[in-house]
Length: 123
Image 1 (spheres, rainbow, N blue to C red):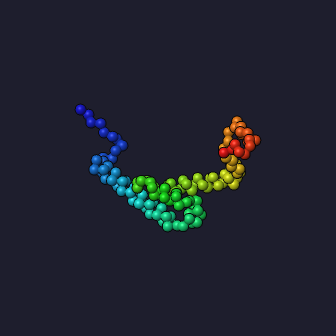
Image 2 (tube, rainbow, N blue to C red):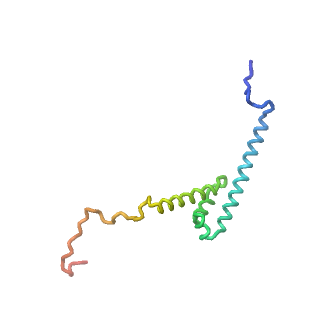
Image 3 (cartoon, rainbow, N blue to C red):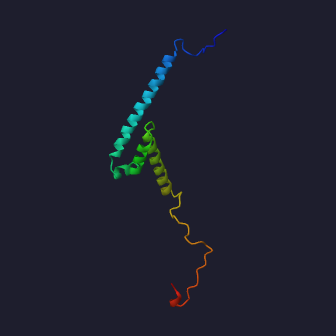
């Protein structure tokens, strides 16, 4: 019986080496997540004015820390700041309507009841 081998695999590749590489990759990801969390923790110490200067709010920082530990909180902060920046540039460029109108509270086919009754019959 002929054994099938991978011609591109190194001659000394072993399952232990693959396991060690996987563990090393897992540790690198955890260290990077810890580093990103510490950077985001520095943002938590800023006051509201300083956060507004970089396009964030206090609730953005809280939302970032509400994410699971293995996710990067700075990614959420980056996305939120970009969303606000794009919305601000669109508003200043005039591409969005500056007159915000609310829908009417009364339907268009509403007919007001008569109010010409004497005062003694009104409730």
